[in-house]
Image 1 (cartoon, rainbow, N blue to C red):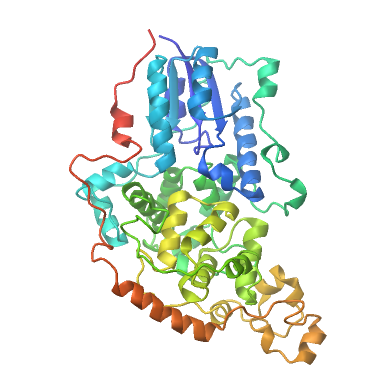
Image 2 (image 1 turned 90 degrees about the horizontal axis):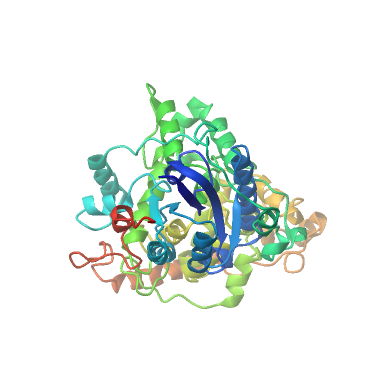
Length: 523
């Protein structure tokens, strides 16, 4: 029986390793690839201009790839539960395919969509490809609880084995006999929006450093996989947070919205490793992909994962509320050049090195400003190209010593840390050109420069550049004691996975149910 199929692109914005798209093409007569701009999807309401530009670039690239297969992308506006039933009827759809998404909103959304599809006689085929593994399998293998340490996580994965191999991208041969009907009116109605149409002002955007799209993702992947010595020797902590060009792959934004398959990345690394000595997880490239998986599993199994309150793995801390401090941090006005340079790079380019994230996250939370990690999470969600719901929350809990990492007495210095890899402050000079004429002994602490030096540099501290908003040496010691007090009040259960009653399912519905449920087909 031939099918009229919708393949719903969500995060998997690519043709390679897209098993749901491959499933759509089986016995397919008419294929309608869609992307839904959902105003209710939490990410869409919080995205800054760089994230929007990256997403729209990825959609354009995807549309271009589909057109080479004599198809195209339809960008639909609205709430999925409202627009999909209309499209089912309009296009006489008999099958809907999509990639599984384990964010709470997405699970609830997909549960509603599956119910509506059944009511319309539409077969639903979800496939896992945004993660390396079926995350529920990981949880099941760990006695029904997410592993909350990396070592335990690795032990669980040993019993499962390596990830599945990626599936090939569809070819012209796969598309034989498949059409994508589109009237001129539909072509205009379902076109990819401009930045202005999603409420962004292009004039406010800086030069694009990381273009979105599958082709750029594969180009970057090839570039790094062609350096076997670099791949085998890669150790994340040894890379530089303040290099003038990235010291890591910057493939994380492409993984976040699915321009790059994690399984393809995993097996390409595996192929480079073959027969060679290489670094190991957690610091290796494979280790970075496993960190992503670790947080995905923890987020799926933990209620209120992106909040402190009601989150069973998160230490409860009496964070201060100081809007002026938060704004100074967000707007690169802390008076600490290394912190302000990092926040400037983040706003301009949408990406910062992971150790730079460590620096500014520690500074905002337990290190200096004693501001809730949830506030930092919101800023990163707006500005980071690789803002990912689970990873963002997990990393902020880690860096604030609220969960996963508990050595709260280890605090990053906003002065000494940057000097380790950039003594002359070239990174600061790049992102804060106002300070570029300061001698290197003052570049990290311009407030210590004599007035004559400040005048010669053309920047007076307190007038042209702010004074430090806190005294780091004093406040960091005070905050260590505050963190010690918070730890003393912790429940002994905080480090353990949340317990569930036997048979209890995730609030948004089970992935297992989604994958195994009998699908109602059209008659």
